[in-house]
Amino acid sequence: MQLSEQEQIRREKLHQLQALGIDPFPAALFPVNTNASYIREYYKGEENKADFTEVCLAGRIMSIRDMGKASFAVLQDSTGRIQIYVRRDDICPGEDKSLYDNVWKHLADIGDIFGIKGFVFTTKTGETSVHVQELTLLTKALKPLPVVKEAEGQTFDAVTDPEFKYRQRYADLVINPQVRETFVKRTKMINTIRGFLNERGALEVDTPVLQAIPGGAAARPFVTHHNALDVPFYLRIANELYLKRCIVGGFDWVYEFSRNFRNEGMDRTHNPEFTVLEWYTAYKDYFWMMETTEQLMEKLALALHGTTELTVGSKSISFKTPFKRISIFDSVKENIGIDISEMDEAGLRDVCKDLKIEVAPNIGKGKLIDEIFGATSEHTYIQPTFIMDYPVEMSPLTKKHRTKAGLVERFELMINGKEIANAYSELNDPIDQRERFEEQVKLMERGDDEAMFIDQDFLRALEYGMPPTAGIGIGIDRLCMLLTNQPSIQDVLLFPQMRPENFED
Image 1 (cartoon, rainbow, N blue to C red):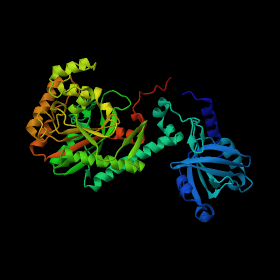
Image 2: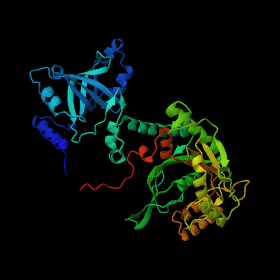
Image 3: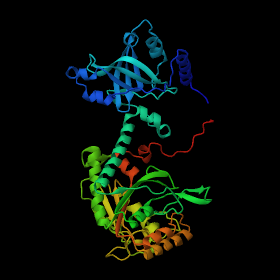
Image 4: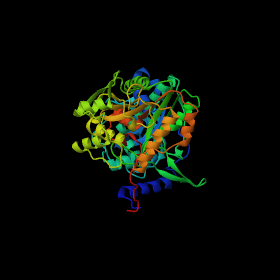
């Protein structure tokens, strides 16, 4: 392993610390009793300084300003940053001044983790700070952090190189506080969703990630092998069919935050491993699901931003209910003036040819309609819009429309030109479902590697009787991108997939 000059110097300091009898990685608990954010928010100077005479906190040193026998430094913990004041005679009250002169002044580096004890005060310039009385090295950092310029709490040259940010997210989180804030908001978003569902009586469940049949979606799966059973298994592409089994079993409303895996391309809105929220509710339909979904979206905007009017990139998007509703055929007609609702496969291929939409020769009518909508219409829906009433060929798990022949009761929620949610009145007729699966097999035989397998056990479950049910899948990563104003899915995944590094270079 090749070490930079800075890394070599830090290792030399590590050895010097050990020679002084100082453990650079001590095991003992450090009795933290507060944090930077709490001090900044609640310390009021003379009014309550007595409450802050014995504070104990820990974090990384992000800057040091040496003034001889005293110095100022910035300490960063999980809640933010605070200035600390270190005076030689305070941390070294006796004759031995080596802790300050040697350890603090010469062996400490930016990125080192220290524990401090002291009292809070206000500097002459009015900055809330901690006057350090005890100083303890808790971790020696052997690799220097990238240098980032800051002033008045603002970052002016945050590291933006994707190769660094996504591959070394741990360092990105340290130096870019706004990145940490994105992931705090992601967790708040998920907790808000859980609260919304739990308050309404939904039950959170877990279903298998390793599946004998990759069902519930049209996608290419990852394949693995179970050694003990000596059979192939698939990483799940969706959890839909297992959640429906729960509905058959007697639960009225179940949900799961599902880690899904699809062996497909990677771009700014796709990652091979991603998170989807799915829920299924008995005795409901897709109209109820639209109302519930828009209520959830409005609640999320308010929870994260305190308003329903959000800025996403250069666009202003309103999450105020109700949302617009339009059929997929009306949407295409509205955008390009062509009615494709009565066209057969040949007609749809002609439309694709005229519009210069490249399509594979082995896909069927449903995929062709999807390609036309995606190329001509999807990107136009910036404000939240429910695209409704898809053709039956596009939706093998969806109940046929109650009044419109050839269609199903399905909607997709589009926001900022992207699909955020996909929902159905769920198909619960086992005979119809078997026929739909058999149509998928025909597509598979034509070479469509995203067509669905037949899940015989799921069909058996339906034969026991599944009540009328509404179901939905919501892309958590895309929703997080939207609600945190991030341009890429990699920006809302702590550790996005990347090509493995070659550490031998």
